[in-house]
Length: 286
Image (spheres, rainbow, N blue to C red):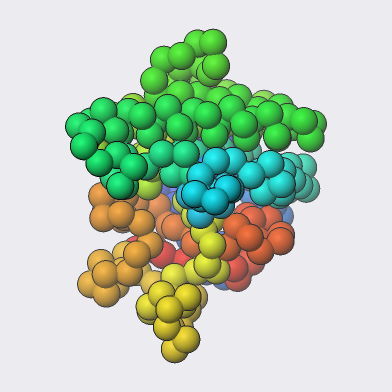
């Protein structure tokens, strides 16, 4: 997901300071940095801004479900997401990287995995993310945007192996990069994979696209009195037990001083507005 063309070797703390200040002040990243980078997943989206980098997670189970059992890939939804990505990349010149989940096909911690060894179930889930990544790659490339899939599990017929320097080079060339197969290890969620890849790629922000437009004090689908936070700190998220991401991913982002912006992937143009530094969703920061 695109985040800008700043040299990857730029000191992370300096990029972090600039990006957080820009987000808080509503600064237009394109004007401020000239170029932006970004990243995303089907269970998550990640965005990286040119010169700045960000990871955007979008959850497959929430976004791509289709059919009476709520499983599978919905071509219309997949196409709409691809159009949002292509529009954002073409209009902002961000470098975009995506982290894709597989919950719309298989979830290792769900009832569909009952009786399976946890590690085996997690590996099946990783294979599901590769299926989503290949489908998303096809949808994006059919709209004229060059895309590469990198998998944490080696399967050369479908995807490149995950190599950090190669991924950085793809972004610098204006390609969208989709990270599949999570971390390649069981017991780690797509949240954690997104936080890890964002940290490795030197992203300035992790953008999490979900079915709600931010972080709420309670589930807005169940509690009409739930209020949305515009900004919240990592410590507040932990204390209030807000479901921003799983605890491992949230702790990693906090330790790496990597801000998270939670927004609705169903809201037209929301991804581009987040990339442009506008007030969209909820910002979680140190």
